[in-house]
Length: 358
Ligand SMILES: Nc1ncnc2c1ncn2[C@@H]1O[C@H](COP(=O)(O)OP(=O)(O)O)[C@@H](O)[C@H]1O
Ligand SMILES: [Mg+2]
Image (cartoon, rainbow, N blue to C red; front, side, top):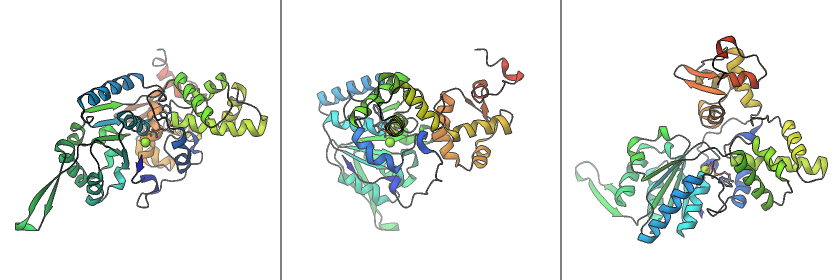
């Protein structure tokens, strides 16, 4: 696997404000980069959950192998930390081909994308992360490359302009995005296969935790793993982060393997509640409930009040709050659900009681 560029380390990227407690935020941090490669599953067997997606992919891969062709271009979408990058690596491994990894913000100039396309060898996989952030020029270079495996280059100026068509080897593009809706129509249409990654069940996350613990030589029992899984917001990246924090706690405070009691105590100290929410998430809910009477309130208002940017809230905090049924999206903004009131320890307002009886 070759990492061409990493947008998280790119200097032209705007730095996001530092989070007070980034443990349960599913975005990748520099600290993750260090150990993610060690624990990242490399095969379908090691890749836990997402079973229907896995089955579909296995068949697609077998068919491509039997026909001796490359895979169709694939697009994966879903919240951060659910295993999009990991899956791309598993596919490359299963196909027995190299994968080149880059991300849209690193493809700013035409020559960035041209350079990568020209460096590809037959059958290789090109992985573009955050593909919804690709600029127009890069997209337009990509269209003929995806469709006909050619690069259309123009040379000369004004009247003497000439188009030069350069053939490329056949390759597979795998795109990943947290926001499928922001992908341009023409780009989306050029992907043969589009899949959404789902949040993981507690049972699946338990397996992720047990697997990671084994690799990192952390001792944990079944109930301990489940206790961490329950507070991992359906997200393997968070589960992997929590296991390390809980393991530190178990070592220092108890010098013992992680069990349910130790896990819960450590997570309480980290202020991660039964929904896996941290202080920042609870502040978001509290804002809607306390200041805006449950909403609806616009996302820009929420972002300004919390000193966050809209994108971080939409991509990182919100998907799980929506999935957990704690907030709802309405045309007029975000609303807190009756569950949110209950979770924060407030009485459910009369006007909402009807809603809570399902
Ligand atoms: N299905 C899975 N089984 C086990 N571990 C997983 C799985 N999916 C993701 N992970 C772990 O979670 C972390 C984040 O996965 P990643 O592929 O980087 O997420 P994404 O690209 O969707 O943000 C990785 O360290 C990986 O080891
Ligand atoms: Mg990724």
